[in-house]
View 1 (tube, rainbow, N blue to C red):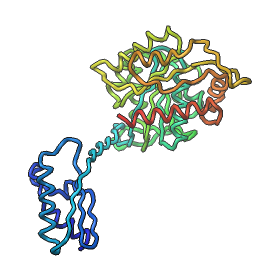
View 2: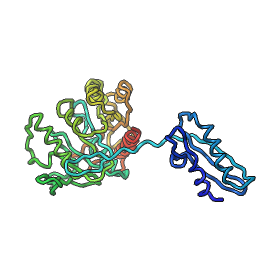
View 3: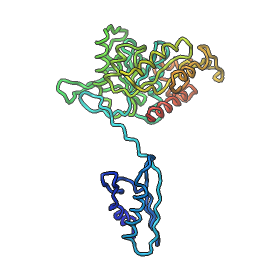
View 4: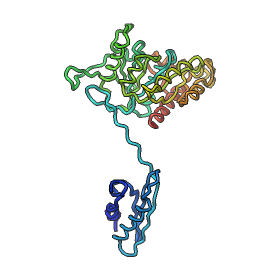
Length: 357
């Protein structure tokens, strides 16, 4: 006797509650073990009790006894096994082609000046350092900072013909293992982008949808600060999976965080918030890395996260090197210092939070 023969016998056992499909094709036969004078069959059942469990155990015994040599000992065991979660399909991100993007995550803030873009850029690089394929779209039309922070100012994205006649696809700028796209690549240095809401929304959608991103594990969208028409348009027209909210710890930021949380939880938007990032959580002098000065208050981010029922994903210190690294175009997440490791830990928690959904 062989295991293959036993599987053939079991393929004749039908489950009356599953349109009479056999238990082998249903994946209910977890294991078959054949030894001298003995056959052991393990059946897998879901967490919900199967009312036909005893019937199926008896049917398995009968099928084996009917085909096995006389005197063979038959053992039937059962295990509880959760059905695997269905794999999320890749999101169709492009008007001309299908870009295989697993997760689109917004990086948002209720107000400006909290270091949202700094967190977004360093989070993108940290995710890439962890082995993920990452892109970042700089959707802050009124203050695009990705070109400066990545030292890609002056870069002009190339374009290639799309499948639809008259449509072009932009190729993102690649650096530090991340694919970058920013409205800043299409403006002259120092040029102010004076756009009304609808014009800004259309430009942003084009900048995200009309890009040849290719296969990505994460596409981060650095959203403009606040909660307005641009945000609602982005969330409604882009298949954004959820958001990470950036804040500073001082109590005055609480109202702005509440606005951001309310926007994503509004029934018309209804996107999950993966967690809160507390930026500038404390000040650490570069010469004394073990010292912490809570100049904006202590544990304000933790209190905010608890109040709104969301996870505190990380606390990023206020260190002079983070600002200097951003201004020089070499983000701190590229290094191995404690502030660099803080972004790596944040990236791990963001990836875990997204993959839980």
